[in-house]
Length: 439
Image 1 (tube, rainbow, N blue to C red):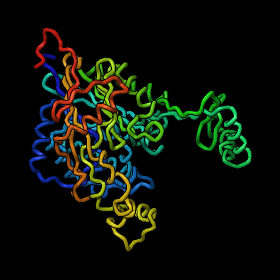
Image 2 (image 1 turned 45 degrees about the vertical axis):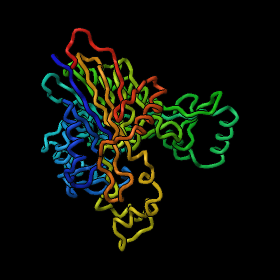
Image 3 (image 1 turned 180 degrees about the vertical axis):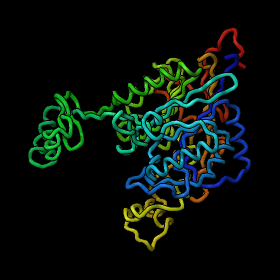
Image 4 (image 1 turned 30 degrees about the vertical axis):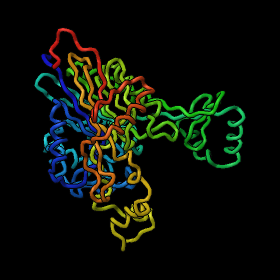
């Protein structure tokens, strides 16, 4: 490597509309093109009804015309992560069609595939002075969406690269005894007991009490903890160790809605453990997204962890169709249309993501690394049209307001990260590499 490599990353792109190339587009594209590596999370399937709607979705059923990938191309993206809670909204047909179109448009993409080996594999981007690997995973998905591994006696299963986690609740002795009494007086654990007895389910473990599908332990105080599932963590760590032997840089994309308690801005404990473990294994950056708002930035061993970059494109209200399940959920019939259904979900746009301004504000980081060392990070705030009519919201524009960066400062303080705000740009500064050309 003879010169620094510049990276740009964005959060979720739930893109369903065609782009009008106005001044805001050209400014955003110019910003992204400053980087060699330009990463996005694609949070929609891309096809023309090539798959059946799943019985469960990521919220709405996300399907976009393949032409939206041309828009992503024109913004400048060259790497796409697509492991998230919408990847199998249209089952395996939608997954296969999305992969086909990503290939046709020439994106380096990771996070889903025909089996676990494909979904979890690193994908490589060839830059002028570096080779960059992308590994993408998600912790937010329906259990059967996880890709399955190949075996000598069975083919694998299409799906996402899973980063599962274990959640356990701790109660004091008195409260746990009350919970056990409730379980004894109801049938909440009856089916689980039969499954364990017949060998179709593993016992929860020593000193662990199962209440329905939740795990409880006795402790000195009431609390809830999460930790990465050891099997998935070990597998992804092994993939990072492979990728760092075959590339100059390794980037991790992780889609995670999970939070601490009811604080969406605070990532769940397992995500922090996972991100740091990735850096320990050799990753050069962890890029998070999922909760549709900003989370803090941690600099761990001189490498960035973006716990959530928010949204880059967010157009859930522009979907053109939804399956019958969506209508039935809100008590609607075949006489209603998709606009009726979306209004029912949002109570005529008085609740949900559309009414929270922070959902429509995000950042685009541009960071520079040289010989694996982090030199600087720029943070560019963007807005997605919170004040616009609902059908026009969702496109990114560079923001002149410092309020977004000031909120990010506060969110990053628990990690000891210092963000300097200079006008409408945030900066995280690092010691320059002596004797190297880092301009």
